[in-house]
Length: 396
Image (cartoon, rainbow, N blue to C red):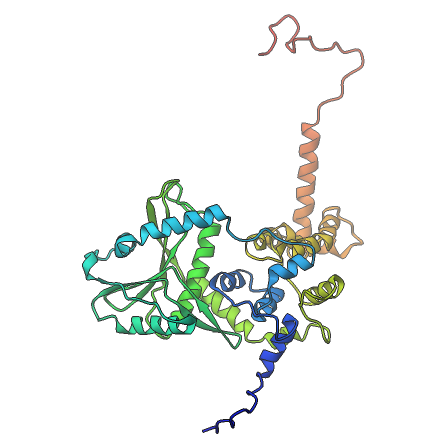
């Protein structure tokens, strides 16, 4: 057993990784921005972005960095959406979460429990560590064969050597001991369907919570998404498949454990502290490769800066991932145009995607030529003033 230091002795120095992450933020006095489920799910949505992986892993305040770079992004929920979401969540959780469990049982085909038979443990405790411990104890204490609903539990997940505290909207414990993650969102279900982009984001966020529960309790592979029906306040629910987003989260968090390798890309002494001049901060940010896509505008505070740089470089990624996938090895707009022009001296013209581009360019030119109005012949009569044919009624 390691002996305790004598009274008055200085505390043990921070481990090397912790000191390096402190230096990346601009010094140990700069507070670390904790990772939450939204940030982790955004990482899973764009696993190739080493820039975001490093800044999030180091706890850098990306909003402050974007402001210092001169490219702030209007990021986050509006006050109206925040208030509406809280009101909707309070509605579906009323009466001990009876509406939540009714939607869950309707989706899974299980028998709906009586409200009095549902255990709703008290999860209050001092500090995040105390709340997380209380959540773990509550999950372990649920009797076999009984339903339980945990309102705003607190979970922990080790990310890049640090503890991230995660707070799902609710967890449901089934009589068989399985646990379902419940996500309550304020975006609507219109005519029985949900915006696939928003549903995908909710699935990735639920997968982060499921990952935090893995190993302590049996987690179900489907989460319950609860949203307002149409434009009212009536709740509607459906199941989200967590298998793919869960695998993506595991892969991306495994990348975060190798932050040192990503940090080695930075020049000596470079950091992301916002007190330095803009040129130095810009050089530090751009020394780490980014993987910009239009979807980043909804999930990352640095998206405006990355979009501007992608457009300046002519990167086809700025047009969207689907376009990038169709263009094969063509990486810039200049290469795409060269391939479409069939310039034999340009290597881009020999790319497999070049033939399809040339065919598309020919079809476009043909369509424009067909749609162009025929030039007026000399001496041909002008159409009547009313716009109709000569001797006939004007078109209405």
